[in-house]
Image 1 (cartoon, rainbow, N blue to C red):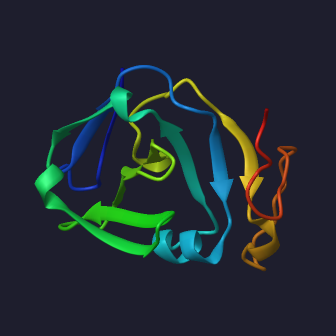
Image 2: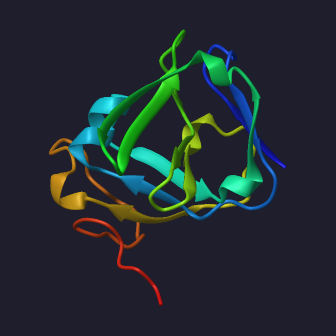
Length: 134
């Protein structure tokens, strides 16, 4: 089991099973929402995810059907969000406790990355979303 929480601890959640590999999104929306050069994300299936506490303490900002930020009303930390259109739960990797057993696999939206940030690792870089496999 993987657990996670917001900064103040009001919102807590658990994932039963493995999550996807982690990716780093450099788009301007993620940078602004997190105040950082990128947002580290992973996903899981909704059937794997459950709220442990604080689901009533979450606010939401929806920019588009596929870009939704959910955050703790008290501390502002990003928290998981069910993206209904694709039927997955988006997980802010920075909120996960301990080692989730996954590592960074790639970077997305690198064409809009912060000009002051240099990507120095060897992970694949994609101008926008990573190509779909299959």
